[in-house]
Length: 86
Image (tube, helix red, strand yellow):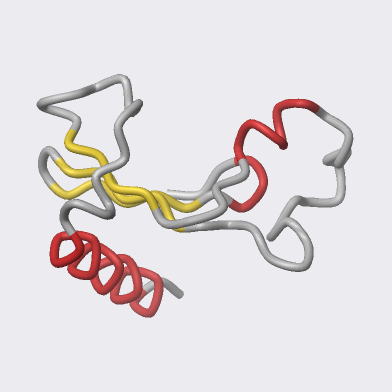
């Protein structure tokens, strides 16, 4: 569920939600990470993103603006999953 630069994603069937991970600093980068590493810049998400992997597995077309209800449901599902984690 979590990757480089603190990126957090959630799958629900064909849907994938990626939570924005940018703020004053990059979240949860880890002590061994180097902020100049180009992979970190590629992993930064400035806004929440939503993808339908069955229709478009390459994750090139963010559907968050077109499907705000699905986006909100995925946000809530992620929050529930994070709250349930020890």
